[in-house]
Image (cartoon, rainbow, N blue to C red; front, side, top):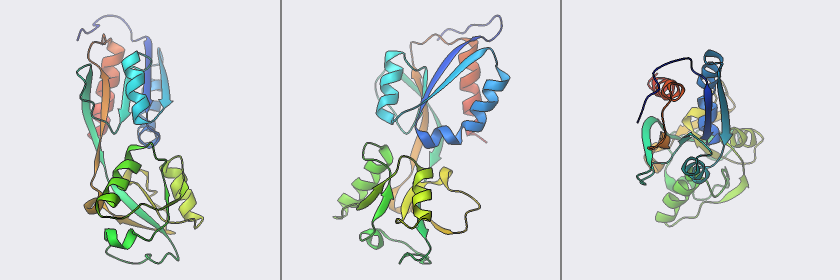
Amino acid sequence: MVKDTAGPLPGTIVIASVYDIKQYYLPLLASFAKTYKDINLTILTRDNTEILSLIASGQADYGLGRINPTARQFFTYPLITTHPRLILPRGHFLYGKKKIALDHLRDCRFVFLPKNTTSRSLIEDRFNRAGYALNVCFEAWSCADIIDCVLLGLGPGIVHDICVPRTERRLQVVDVTTIFGSTGVNLIGRKNKFLSRADQAFIQAVRRYARK
């Protein structure tokens, strides 16, 4: 990859990201936009499949997602690992239980992400392999929406650890990584893309933020 080594840092960078990862990196993205005011930064919210399509077609420069593409046209940098958290509203029959097994969840009616999401597929696959069905009573667009629905008593939910509010005392939060595993988040781009100094600055900023 060729580096642009002279001049200021003007340019355009388009990033496609799944919703919760975008929210996690929002402080970084805001800081980057303020620091490099000559760079036109555009953030798109998409699912993992759309992210790869946008990068491949050149409509997006980079993606932030739970995908590790095998196609040779992409490069990836590992960023963070996210872990699933079961969130329970007060009054739920599992509320207060210290140890949760998959068998305890078989009769739950969940608030969950839509079917086309990576997280939904992974959780459903784990249920199916155990001979159970994931029962979803309400589909929410994001982890933030799931949390709102759980607080309204619509059911329990499973969200990513980076989305769990630290000060919310009305919920019981249970680490269910041992049941469902964890997922890695990657920065994805095209191998044949010319890397300007603006691109280099963005990649370095994202990778540094991931190590905090």
